[in-house]
Length: 142
Length: 461
Image (cartoon, rainbow over all chains, first blue to last red; front, top):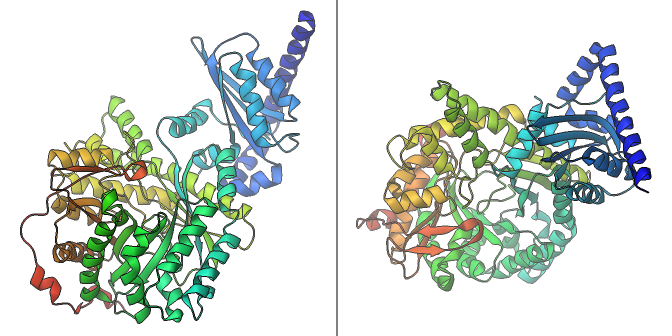
């Protein structure tokens, strides 16, 4: 039983790592495309979002604990979310993880999605905020 | 292609929302009631109620859904309607309190916090319909809890209707007395305006102007806490800085606050369907009684000892201007009052400054020359005469008219209270400290009536 869970976690982490790596490679392969995409975002955040499908920014903060990435990645996958970007910073033992999730194929309403993620990380003493990507775009991109 | 955010960018957004009180102060639906006028007041009131219930039915749930999706708190949801005197006039009723009750009932059932627009525009003269509405204000405010009333008594183009100013002195006094058991709280929902904007989402002066479309969503930003924290970080950074750096810092923060407001407003309008248009973002910095969410504290952070001390007008001018500059960069749909609010009771720092003697009514008048409204939520002794109230209103209105800006007076002669006493209203209205008005008046001047002619700057053609 224990081994089953460990295996599943390991698979999830591997999957997340692959996604991040693939994302990094594709960005490197076409810097012009990235510049173009950025320019579009700047020109019209809302238009861009509609074309590409809605995304949510999931921010998890807390003390570093074994299994936290796996827990949240699993919760996202189970709800039908697709991880498109992930980054993590660790200051001493305190971490901030930011995951951008494509929510266009979400199997549950956004409110349920939030509740699931919160439950998933609260068990490990962390906190989680889910917000529409547009709010970060609006505040941080001219 | 992923949109890559720096961790610091996401953290900043969270910090602004969670610990610096970034919020959208109000989402206000402006709605035309011009098709509700009927030959009897009963029928007019029924039409008003029916239209609000029909058109605004989805406003509150939609606002709640947008708040949940963007994680940005939306503090209040409001309605603003066509100045009601224009709607009730056809009924020829001498009193129109029933129409206020219809507004109040609809607002309560829809779950909106306030409905603005129990209003008359009388800058040049008064029709029988305007008269009926103004005479109904004290009873209307005493028998409702959500209705807000405003009367525009002057514009730069038309000059000042001094008869209406005197009327408003009496109406304010009567409203305080009609709500005496609650500290004259009716006056918190009553404002006398000069140059009233057509698209202001903030109460008590919200109304849906006659040149507006059928239904719009206007948004009022907030965010004094965000600006205050940014200025604190600037001071504590150890880097040398001067007033241009301060202005630049405020501008950047105002940009972000306005962006949040515009995003929320456009999204609410979009979800409400094609017949609802997005109107404007009002860039006003609106304080709350919470510590740290205060315009007074921003002035103090800039180095003024207390709000109202010498230097306050210059500091507030810098603040208001930087807020506007940051905001217009963020949104092409800026309107309403757009500036900084200094509602005394609603701002913990302002109350403290008034109590300490730094912030007198005279200083508030000076400050109103460079911010977005005028004497706002100012409590004065209950025995202040209607004539003195009218004279105070006249001064503030003149500042607006002659400086080509909106000014308003929301003053509360607190029944039974003397200067130095306090009255707690609670919620966003906060705690009012009763300020002295001095022993001199201008009774003969305000009783002269007539009109103060429009200033030379009215002749711009």
